[in-house]
Image (cartoon, rainbow, N blue to C red; front, side):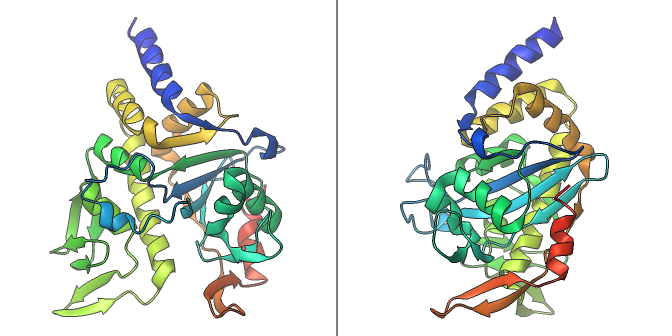
Length: 296
């Protein structure tokens, strides 16, 4: 009886998740591995104007961009996580030239982003998962906060990050958002401010750490009621492809705690566009070797 109730409640939460019509552009699985394109969108849809995080969200441009882009590869050959820098300058499907990858969703929606990843980087995408700011905040609430270990006090006056001491800190929704959105991450070392010199690449590393912490916490939540609470809490801000079934979702949730994916760093190098914009381009041939690892 308990199992039936669990399935019914799980199905109800699953039904709340918005389906993104991208089935037609997803790759067919030809091997044993599965690639999930996981996107953090900067969409402000559903955000209360009185939300204390409004300033952290940044200016509403009227259209969504991908704030975080990660390829999660799962399979018997190992689990891998390949973050794609938002400033990666590549051909964007639906345009006549190259732009930052985080603009692909503006030009062609989720389908355009999927096609760009597949055609410009050669990575097959089997499933698509997107979470907006509402979903992110609700996820942190649902798991009861996320613990991050800091090697020094850290601040970012732009994002609102304020970690007064080194060591593990449980981040609530406000500080979690400030941490993953931080673009001016500053450590306090021997009383002096040390700004992270790696810019967006450092931000990616912090997002990876947070992503791992969340996956571990969700995966180790063995209590069915806890899992349902998490699922129900994030459903409003979660979007998945229209090919992902209920079994697929349950299977991924059950695997999350034991995935412990190896992080692959995509070799890139800074350059400047003809218009003077600072961007990143693939550093060949080592970039292709990294991409090859998630292509199978």
